Image: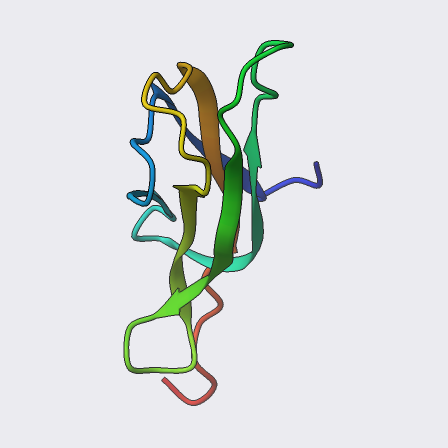
Length: 103
């Protein structure tokens, strides 16, 4: 990654009951702004009926033009009452804030 960039990864091992959601937030440090991000989940073990789905993955803004975190929302769309534990991740790509011109 280029100098000054920082990759923030939030990782959680979890299960999601059928029809419920897991929300992960990857925050940039105060001295950086978000320029991108993404989400990932581990495959469930073979033979499992659990079906985890990435429902959304997007930047969250603070009321200005600068995004400060990447949010990922996962859900379980199966009827499996014994969901499997897997790894879920949200990732934020952050760069240093640039001074405002004329400040």
